[in-house]
Amino acid sequence: MRLERDKIIDDYLEFLKYQKNYSDYTIKSYETDIMEYFNYINSEGLNYKDIEYSDIRFYLMYLKDKKDNNASIDRKLSALRGFYKYLVNENILHNNVFSLVNGPKKSKKLPRYFDYNELEEMFLIPDTNTSLGQRDLLLLEMLYATGCRVGELVSIKVKDIDFNRRNILIVGKGNKERYLNYGEYCEDILNKYLIDGYISLNKNNSDYLFLNNNGGVLTERGVRFILDKIIKQTGINKNISPHMIRHSFATHLLNEGCDLLTVQKLLGHESIKATQIYTHVTTDRLKEVYFHSFPRAKKDD
Image (cartoon, rainbow, N blue to C red; front, side):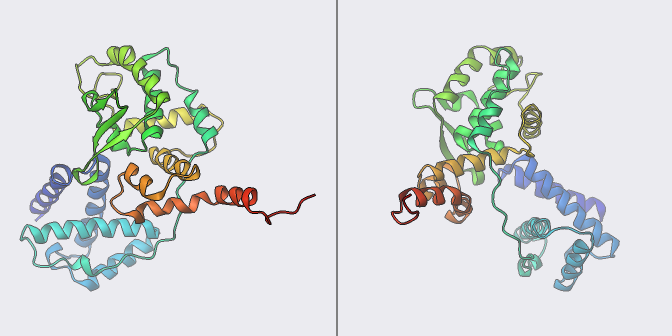
């Protein structure tokens, strides 16, 4: 039974990688969630093929008892919903019992982002006299200039860049192509990196833009490590993630008057609902415009 289970899970993870084009980080998260589920049903003497709705309710109680928050539980249910849908499509099961289960109501959290002055402080940290410093500054500039996901960033190849139009062809979620634009600040460090640091790092004649110290392709984990190292050298008291820079990109565009539909396209969101979260973080800007523009917002002295 264990061999059968392991093969099915491995097949599903391969499906996510090669058919759904999910990132390694996302696939690892799915694997962790699915394995936790299998460990639970094994401890309860259950078979994954015979799971009923009542069994899932007990599983949810188990997750709550071990203090998983609502967002974590919802993510795990989503992973299992996708896994069981795969089992149905492969004719291993007849129905997806997880399709009947709704996750707990998540508390809405506003996206965390950087103020522009904080980003400027980060831009000053990498030493552009070194190969790795050039790469690290380009990494920062390109994340902010394009608003791309970290998985999209590490997948960029030099041939994907149109230097005349200053844009990059990337393949995003669902294998969908879109162009990312970048500006003059990003252009300057990109050109410097390609004629200097990139040549030193590219010991293996790689096609990829972002390389590690050994000449291999920089991983998503590597990006997170670099950003953690940079933030520790600043006076910024925030836990950093690559997604925070993406949030900053969207928030700053909206604060400067960019419309929501354009931000949606730039971020590569399939639905406008995914982009609407950023309308909540522009409150300070709206307040500033109101008190500056509305004639009866404040009295004359």
